[in-house]
Length: 192
Image: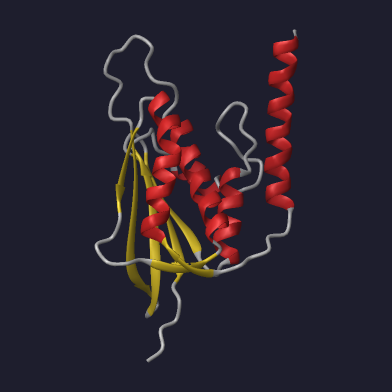
């Protein structure tokens, strides 16, 4: 009973933390941030959890320096939410050891343009089951979740963080092929 009570307390604390994270005001401290280094750090941090789920992580930093004008810890939180979401979407590994299909997460950075303005892109893709179009239209709605025990606040929190930086999150998903989230972020202005 004590173990059950402790697990329930942990679950409630996680729900409260997610809610406070979503509802609370974000104080941004934007600074030029190396996104290539960020995805390397996140992969190192996330690797043990992914390995337990038998998911491989691939990191592809852009060949050139990719810098975004962001609050690094907050963007890390947004990307970590996407990584957790990808891991949960793939579910538990097959206990019988039979081939369950590819279980991979990819992180990639690149520089690009958006309406003629330079932007940095950070992509998180998975080889999970993907989502139908109706689910895709609802995933950023607070409290909407397709997972049992999920709070439905991870993706709305990520979106809010990115939008408060003047960026946006794009999503592309195909059933049975996986999902890709792209963070489009502002870059520091360079003097002429």
